Amino acid sequence: MPPSPHSRVAELHNLAAHAHEAAAAAHEKGDHLSAHELSRQAHEYSAKAYQLSIEIKAHAEAAEHSG
Image (cartoon, rainbow, N blue to C red; front, side, top):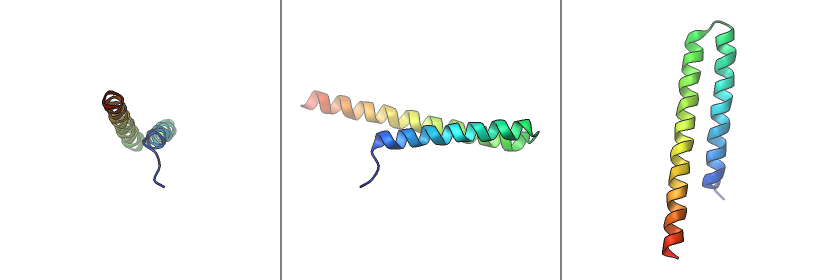
């Protein structure tokens, strides 16, 4: 069975958190290019999680109003 949309949102949040932690570690080591790329990746994961959350909410509201 495929993962639920809520599980996917949680996974994206976890990926974003991991990328933030890796970015911080790279920054502390002076690897600012890697830190920047990891921060960009974290932002991308967060944005995807947010968008999916909006879609889940819209779907739930549509189901609520149709039933």
